[in-house]
Image 1: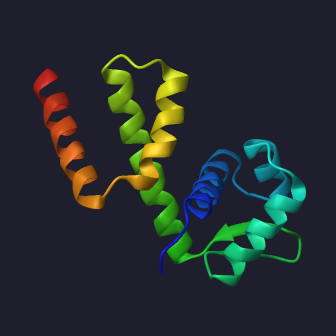
Image 2: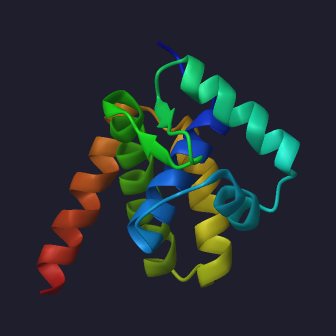
Image 3: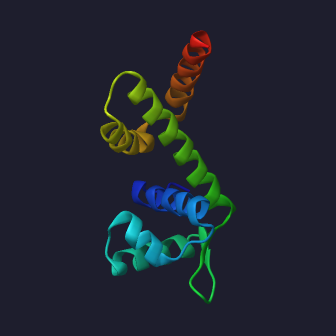
Length: 126
């Protein structure tokens, strides 16, 4: 199933908040993303309907297996792309913002090649 960039961002945000706070509710996503409560509510409903998340009766959100796989893939991409951009001198905030955009459009094969190149360069430095 093809997933949109915005859904990937929400899943990644849930993963980050889960790691940071241990649990996630919609209000946490509102505060993190600075989006309106209705926007987050609609997004969470779509993610739930598509089987990416579950929400319990208290409003706590958990990633289902497929949602977690997507979130972790996007997060790994983000972290590596951010590190690569910073390594070539891009300012930290700009690197994070640009990594966030690139992580969604880069092809798997291209990303794997960049990752292999970056890792080999880092190994040479150590």
